[in-house]
Amino acid sequence: MQPVTKILTDIVSSAFGRCGYDPKLGVVAASDRLDLCQFQCNGAFAGAKLYKKAPIMIAENVAAVLREEGIFSSAEAVAPGFLNLTLNDEYMLKVAKDIEGDRFLGIPQSEKPQTIVIDYGGPNVAKPLHIGHLRSAVIGESLKRLAKACGNTVYGDVHLGDWGLQIGLVIAELNERYPDWECFKESFNPDTDSVPTLNAELLCEVYPFASKKSKENEEFKAKAHTATFELQSGRAGYIALWKEILRTSVADLKSNYQRLDVDFDYWYGESDADKYIPELMKILEDKGLSYESNGALVVDVAEESDKAPMPPVIVRKSDNSSIYATTDLATIIQREKDFAPDKIWYVVDKRQELHFTQVFRCARRAKLVPAETELEFLGFGTMNGSDGKPYKTRDGGVMRLSDLIETVTNASLERLTSSSFVDEDDREDYARKLGMAALKFGDLINHRSKDYIFDLDKFMSAEGKTGIYLLYTVSRINSIMKKAGDFKAELNGIYTDAERELVLKIIMTGNAFSYALDEKAPNYICENAYQLAVSFSRFYHENNIMNEQDEKKKSSWLALAKLTRAIIVKHLDILGISTVENM
Image (tube, rainbow, N blue to C red; front, side, top):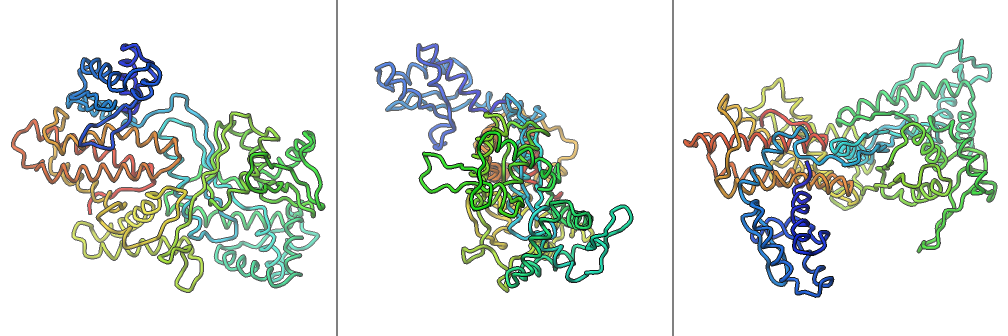
């Protein structure tokens, strides 16, 4: 289905044309003054300049034609030239029924479906996930689900940091602790020699220890750089150890992402792009883009329009090792070969914008992808504490993501302890779902580019713009439908103002999805879900559904409640939030 504003734009554009005006003037938007009208068209103002007429005259001409359409309860020209439109109940009900019967629940499907690769998550191997990884994971997952829901082919790639200095640091530290391991010997034979089995706890302890050590000990730092270079050069023992580090880390990462209901289609890492680096270097050389500077290989990416200095991108360091820019460029080659995507989106901390500007410009100059392929940086802000600074633990450290998940889950469990609506056997599962709803919605309700304050009490509230409030709304409708049993539910009319408001919100849902996809911003989905829940609450309080004696009204109200639930649940699914049966 098309969004209702697109349907109305087609109708109003036709009316402009029938009046002798340019149909392009008939763009319809939702009104921000529902006390005046539901929709509005301001094309008469632009038409006044084209046709040397007062805008009110043009608006009156078009309004007269629209009144013949039979879908408007009101089509009025309002000085100085606004065209105010309000749909009649019959047409609103028809659109609601169309949504009810639509397998996509009114979510507009892309006219030209595209292939989209979304780069999100971005964890580093051998390091525990911390709260800084939350936003990339939940925003990226939501965008993936949104783009898929709109009919596109979408691939989510975690893009592991598994080939850089952090691996060299771990290898160097393990070498100092366990020098007798076969993998550290020059004679290591991968066919006959083995690597000890590692565990996540050891790796999570080794990396921060080694990282701190490298800042204090130049000799160890040099050793880590050497280990990184030898790994990337294919030293057999280091490759075998790296594979074990990767196996251990990925298993741990997957368990944490699973708790967030975040699922990646591909677990590619920087190492997977390594084989494309020679091809990258040849392209840059053949096109005359790369040159040596202070021993490093660089590419100029500055443009005349730059308002600030734009440094060249380094594609090979003076010690011949690769860096992030190298693997990011090689990854673009890989993705073009594997997926031939129309778009590649990068859901990354907004502080990385300069890096990606350099990478994208280099990719464009080297023609690594077709000119029409979209490369877009979707930067996100930070999750802050009450002091407005990046959220920290009580002792000032960076909180592990697993600890944050545990915190919100325990807070939910505490609230469920006294609940008579949840069986004791179900409490842990409910607590996890409530905690994730609170955490994810609290994040996603903010535009991805904005910083926000982490406020657990606010996020856990059953009132206001929270995931808990939405789960409560769904559970309330579950209760209504359970009480109704087999009573026939069928949309047959609009009987009250509150009902009319809810139906309008439902038929406007397609627009929220269009806005969200156009801006790559899940907060539109959050806001629309909340507005639906608020409208349903008003409808529920003003109409006693179960005690209604008029069976026709009761049938329609039950159908409306059922449709509202389906649409809110669809919103929540795209946000990666699971519902609960009752609360």
